[in-house]
Length: 191
Image (cartoon, rainbow, N blue to C red; front, top):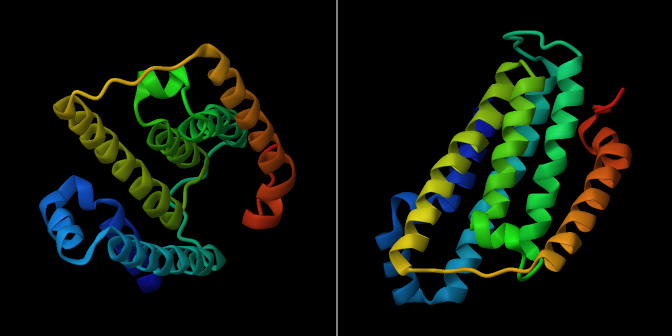
């Protein structure tokens, strides 16, 4: 559990710099430059991510069960991740109405992903992992929207671009749920 917690702290410390320490982040970038910031950010995030994956895997071998969710919650989680994949795609397809309306669709997608997995899983490791991601995503979304408003940022989008995000998201979701989730995570969402 120690490696898992350290991983969460490292990962979220970098990903929360604009939420809690934007001035420090800006000073670092001014002093060392954007490339060194991105390098340090990436290294710390990657180390954190590896520790999260390894620590979570260790916790799954001897889980502390807090509750046993009904089987139907797996199906609900799989369905809730569908819009999460569309939101993720919308974050990278330029000019979507989804991004224009939501502002930060990837963070919104992380919220849906984390919530859906909290519904379907009941171990201590699950609560720590998905609860941490949900709490972070809520704080980051609020912080990002506040920054957008302060900057007067206005986004525009076209419905045709949403169709691209929808197709990419649906295909990505199908491939992940049908083929990758079991081999990567060890759980078949629709089993």
